[in-house]
Image 1: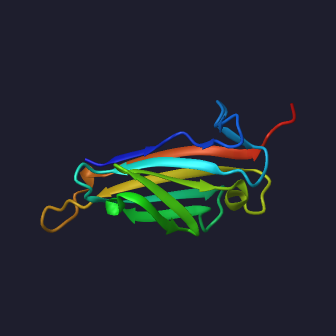
Image 2 (image 1 turned 135 degrees about the vertical axis):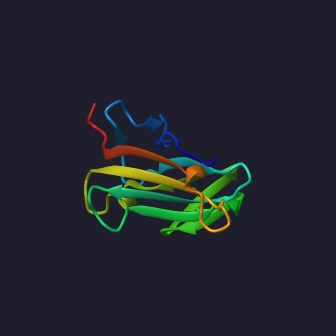
Length: 146
């Protein structure tokens, strides 16, 4: 079976590391900080394909979208004008600035959808029971004054 997992989002730099709070907000100090978005999309024999979509509000097209075979191994590839890094074993991440995610909005709510589709077939049709999906939401907003 496939694995789909969206790990904790963060803004690692500058210290201290900022993470999504209990209310679902990730607060940025400047629009140039990188939002670190990690996920796992895997199959034991690498026979899968994944799609990660990040949608802001009800805006189309998505703020970020990537579709890739998991055979990429470790290294990087380009998606939606971003560089996606892979550390192997189905682990991926992308670093995107708040400006790129928010567009013209000062803050925004996002839905993330990770679909991992197995390549297994019964000889005629694909077998969807091996698929996996993960969904996560978060809001991106400026840091509050102390």
